[in-house]
Every structure is written in C-alpha cells, then in structure tokens.
Length: 405
Ligand code: PMP
Image 1 (cartoon, rainbow, N blue to C red):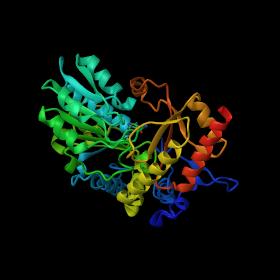
Image 2: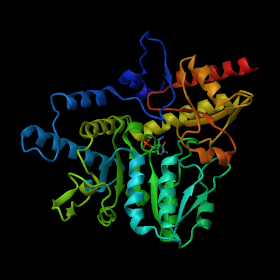
Image 3: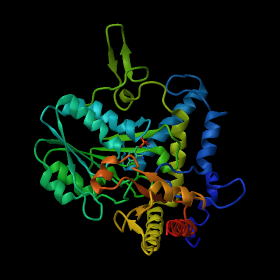
Image 4: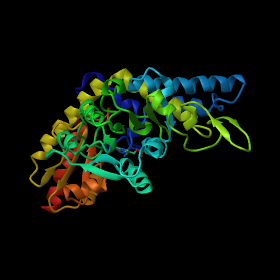
C-alpha cells in the first residue's frame, strides 16, 4: 500500500487471488503479466455475443468486428507513437515479429559479407533469427559488450560499427538485468553508419513510455501478453515506406490482392504480412490492455516499479550471501544469485512462502556465458505489485540463507 493512484490496482487482477484468500506474491511479470478484469471481460464478450470473422463478412456482425479489429490496430499505433495505423503489423508476438523482419527485410537487405550488431544481453528471440539469416546469406554477427553494471555499452557499439553493418538489433529493456537502453542514442549511432535499427520492446512497452518517432528506430517489436493483454498477438511497427519495400513472408488468404493458378499479387502493408485469419479477439484484448495501462499512465507505472526495484535491491543487498546483478536503475527487474545455492533451489524454497519468481537462463544463454554464471533468480515487478511483495521476497531469501546457513 501507500502508493496512492496504484493502491486499488491489485483488485483488478483476478489472477492474483488465491482460492483460500491467502497472499500470493507474483514476481514473474517479465515472463508474462497477469490480466486485468477489463481485458478478460472484453475477450469474453468478443468470443461470445460479438464473435465473427473480420475482413470478409458483409453481414453486420462481421463488419462491426472488422471495425473493432482495425480500431485495435489504431490504438497500438498511437500507443507506440505512430500516426499511421498501416504501420502496425499484427503478429503472434515479438518472436514472430523479429522472424518476419529477418525473413523479409533481411532476406532482401542482408548480403554476403554484411554484418549485424546485437548485444550480449539479447533474448534468444533477438539472436537466433539473425543467426539463421546470417548463416543463410553468409553474413556475420557481432556482439556489443555491456558496461560493468550490465547495460549495452553504446560507446563500444559506436567503435564497433562499420559501413558493413546493415542492422543493429538491441533490447529496449533487458529481460534479465532490467537496464533501460538510451534508445535515441543507439538509433543515431546505428544510422551514422547507414545501418537500420531494430528495438526489441518486449520488456519496455509495459515499463516505459515508447515513441518510435522520437526514438528514430526503424523497427519496433512487442508482445501483448507482457503488457497485461492476451497471448497469441503482438505487433511489429515500421515506417510505411519500409514495410512497403518488404516482400511478403507467409502466403495465404487475406494477404493477396488477386490470385490465379499462375501467381498472385499482394496487398499493401499491413495486410501483405497478415496471411490467414488473424487473432481477432486477442486484438480486442490488446486494445483493452493498452486502455488499462494508459489510464494509469506509463510514467506512474515506471516510477512505481523503479521504487519497488530500489527497495528490493536495497534489502537484498543487506543479505550477506546475495549478489545483485544489473544496474541500480533497473526498470522493475531484479536478477540475483545466492552464494552456494542453486537458483532453482532459491526459487523452490521461496515458492513455499507464496512468492513466485523465475530461476533459469531466461532465454538468454549467451548472457549467462558472458557473465560466467549458469542462471539467475529473477524477480520482476508489474503494476499490481507493492511493498508487501518486496517484503515477502526478502523474507523468502532470508529463509533460504538460514536453511543453507
Ligand atoms: N524479447 C524479450 C526481451 C523478451 O523478454 C521476450 C519474452 N520473454 C521475447 C523477446 C519473446 O517474446 P514472445 O515469447 O512473447 O514472442
């Protein structure tokens, strides 16, 4: 408690309630966020009395669903700072968005001898698609090192970049260490050598206000389920001209203009990249999630999560055997290790205290290698967490320390 505007937020999330009414401290929002009742209600109606297909039906129910599906696209555009809803491609999630860029833009623009710069803290989703592309065309991937406190080292990036680099792909917020990238500076460094700049915004969209125009990036990708919306939908943003110059990826219904047995012509963006019946109700759910987050305000959410992060880091830092990773100004994500205790044991013991954290490599195995650790314990905050969650985490960690003495 004591957070003013955010005090009543927890009761909006049925996923945080327990059968016996006891406390459950959900600290795994970086993996996936719980859903507010408004998202659940929107989707229940969408699958119920409002359900119909989009883009095809001439009957009223389908026309209305199409209107709402396209309104969701507009909402995502404005949320990311774009004023053109044709710049939003609906995808399954950030993973599919990056694969789309690698296969379409990358297939045309990355050639033998070219280089791609990623960083040491990337999620597998922002590594493997580039490795697949690079091995296919004969390109090379370079890895930007981190600063001592675990942020992407942009001074190093600037020195590493050459005219051979065609793409820079960085996480906007690290899913393991929580550091926030100076995205504007990264964009300008990339553009100085003529490279395009992709931001993996998975962990950023629920935590910091994003404006793709202000940042000046070329591609921005996100997943709805980390933003308090449903799984199964996410978005790729790119400038319309960039999308228009990209060939299609998956073929099928909806993405074509005219098909004969001899060939097909394709829709303009974003339809060209949306083959098949889309995630209709999920789009409505994402719309409701953005409305929910926007009503509270990302600045308030960011301040709240930074405050919890500081409190958690301060308290955990007092415990002898704890080693904190990542920067002090991490945006809501705290990774740590305990001397002599495997992260999985830490997570299992504190689960008994009703605290849900994640232990593992967090889909960032190369980062574990880079830091020379096998895995971490990760506590990540969401809009619904408060000081009682921090206190429960600290109690759990104290208990682990006593058990392993
Ligand atoms: N990038 C980052 C930084 C992530 O945290 C995640 C999800 N853990 C992804 C990409 C992949 O997102 P999704 O699984 O929703 O496609």
